[in-house]
Length: 210
Image 1: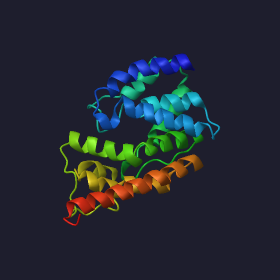
Image 2: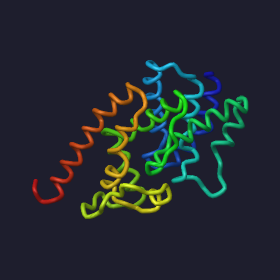
Image 3: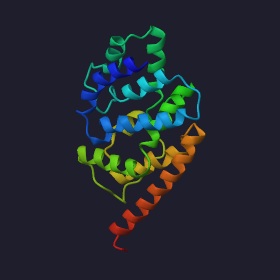
């Protein structure tokens, strides 16, 4: 297992180092740490979880070039059966939120990777990542006149460049209620409350009532 993981690391590290700070190699390391923590309480195939974590953002639509499929290319270079490759792909498919239109986790491995990734979108790190991505895309820090969208397609979710603060209401504050594992739910609750406190302070400092 360790050899496969190390081979995969070599393939993906340079890819993530080319992304902005919201989805860089440090993000992958944190998600892996989260996943390992969750696996202490859950019975899961560690190899599937580890490889899915390492590969889950290499073909993210936000960064993927037209015609590119780095996820499949890297999987094919590893000494894996077709069944193992498909299982990892299925796990990765369930990770993305997609404006609330994501695929439901269909295995414990998918539940763990989904929770591990979503935990990194919450709390202090989640706040930092949101503004890192917004800065990379030239988005406003906040726009209190902007109405968060309640229902949208994946295309609508990705197409509109809303402010970073609005992103909390359209996605991040919804994640707590979509966690799968008990450990994930417990950690998410604390991080969720921290984000609410941050948004209250941000609003206070920007509406002239500080």
